[in-house]
Length: 381
Image (tube, rainbow, N blue to C red):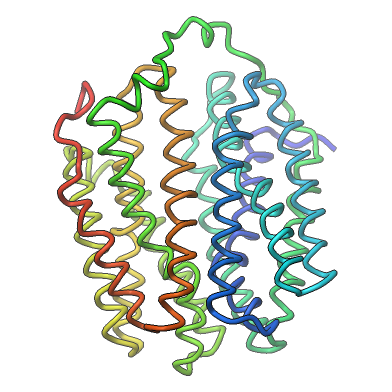
């Protein structure tokens, strides 16, 4: 079956983020339902984030020929499904350590590679990336909300059923044939390449990377233990699902109006807003458990996460061509993988012993970012 390429891409984003909308909010709940302690859950989720870091850093950039992206995505989707099946076999911590690492190793690179495919297709035919990518955010909302309702009705086992169906749908969607296959750009090899050592030694670059790693890493306690924390406070899984969805809705709105809201903002100013939003958000989360406060905290997701991501895209896009690709890979690996991986492992220990106090630690993690923001902006900003 042949599908219009932009629709093929939208379907890929939708099925991926539908699955991620199940995994990210609820996988800690599934692990807890299997009888694992918070410390073990933190170790397992952290191992998964380390694998995600490795996958984003090594697998995603390894596909240098854009014409191979569709095939690579299909292979990664198949391997992701294989490891998803592994969750059904055993719930011993040693087995789950292997499975969760393998699952994230192949699941993680799917987004940067799909983004690379989108960039390739934008050079081949007119395509509104924002409208296509929006299906991913919508799918995350649907996935988290639906899973919350199913867990309320059927218990934690519904999480694995739904995740398995989501990953299977992702693979089947990618097996469809896009109407226009990606082709390589002849000008790509002509771009000047900055050596890794030179690039990462630049003061604005390493300060930027450290800053965004702290800001994104501060989300680790929320990603791993918010659902467990709220469930222990008496909230139903369906309410938790809707709270997670609210955060993504706020994210979508800021993405949609980002040009209007922040077109005159520098990356440095955006990072300040993100840091302040994070400090306020995690401080509130450590202090209050009432629903109105939880709504405010989730709306602040558009500041703690989305504004940070916008700052990163603004900083990276101002670089030269080859630097953009490299910095995008490092940003994805460090900020969205490695930093969260380390903080997830720490969060398991902190949640075990401090409970809500883990969110005070997350607020403290965001504080240094205020002072680490790069003072010299790339050309054009």
